[in-house]
Length: 52
Image 1 (cartoon, rainbow, N blue to C red):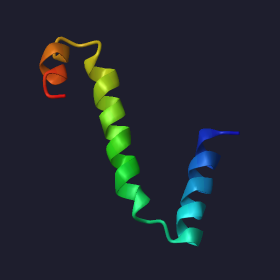
Image 2 (image 1 turned 90 degrees about the vertical axis):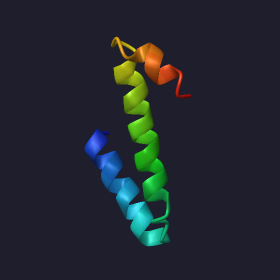
Image 3 (image 1 turned 60 degrees about the horizontal axis):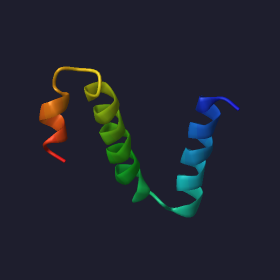
């Protein structure tokens, strides 16, 4: 199963079940995960970890 088909299936789920309120939560979690992944290998890591 490709990543694109998982995304398509998730969007269809949101549309059919009227769960659009989940979209901002998932976007926030993805951005937070990206911040943690990218900051763990940079010189900014000690400063970002103090925020949490």
